[in-house]
Length: 529
Ligand code: FE
Ligand code: CA
Image (cartoon, rainbow, N blue to C red; front, side):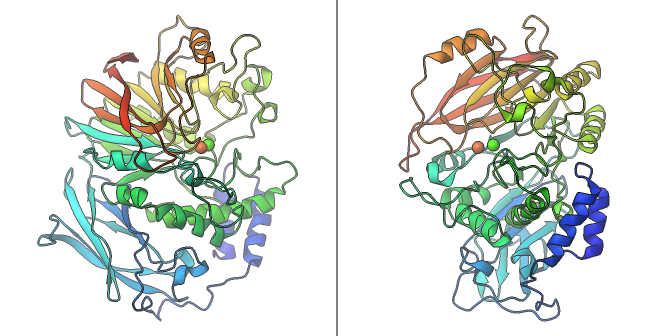
């Protein structure tokens, strides 16, 4: 738990949230019982003998050209409060090598897994060579972790010829099996980008394919246990061990369709909501291979960041939840009315928007990628009149959306590509300054990837889809299957394979590429290959 001084600092730094409100949250957090107060850094313990503390596996993430984060979390009983660990720090030894036999060690060291952070470990293994594969493992007491594989990125500006990554989102545990990750594991991928809804916060429901443990998530222990339950899935855990991940969240890591300090439900005290947010954000940090600079300060956590992949791509990972203004029109599907054009409304918040603009104007890359949560394409979801748009997506924040598209066009940002999750369906969209002016030139391409499992088995294509496509000519592709998107980047071409899983209600569903879309460098707009 943070000190009052740290919370005060967080309050000063937080842009999206009113300062008085923030101080009230600080007081609320300080009043919570400190379960781990007895833990002191100079008394280290060992994990309980005989129990495997590495049941949650290993992961790596946030690579740069010279370093990568190595992650694990000691938890011999992952679903219990405290994870089955003693309430004391535990020393963990880590090593990273050039070969799977660990004959050529590149770096090694010690880290302290503390109860304050759920005995998670976030090691930044530095001094590595750019653009190459490594192997890593941990040891705690007598226990050894599985071996993970990871890689560094090519140096910013280097003439990289090829990079392959996949992006995924929305993996409701109760809705289906993670067959998509089993397929992803067969691909030769340099990176996985997760766009959010990594967990869902709802209570366990009987009669589903699998069942959440516990009720609706509120406390730090609740969120920790949910993350642990998801990560115990061998396919998800396995994919984490195969290559580095760059993660961001959407809403369900905390609460459905929240906006900054505002809950979706009416009448929730924002102070209570921010205390819940602090719990959710901390558990998220603990569960993910993030750099220590993402360590949350109370209810505030810096998640937006960039990755440079040679001269090939600049990957900007965004956070459209933490800083956003409340959804217009009470978050109900609406026509594009005045409220959608409110110039004060924002998905990014001022600080993140400024950072994004600076990043894009200084980028040396061929492909400039915005990895984010909610659909940027302004799509009328109702066939026939009247028109209906989602207020939780960029269509509810049109002023900021137009400014961003105009920025991309006037600043000649090279080959902008937007990656999106959230809506459990596949889309390929041409993006324009005004998406309803279909004959204007496209500025960017949006690839919306469907869910890993959320929504369950694919429904047959509804007859309205043809009409929906006719009313939205900027939409080049739309299906409602499960799966993920695999992307291959070269200096001349971006290729997105939409991988579809036929069935998630049972393990081992059939997997096939449903469609491939290609963007040629220098020519905005995707074409079906
Ligand atoms: Fe979702
Ligand atoms: Ca969502």
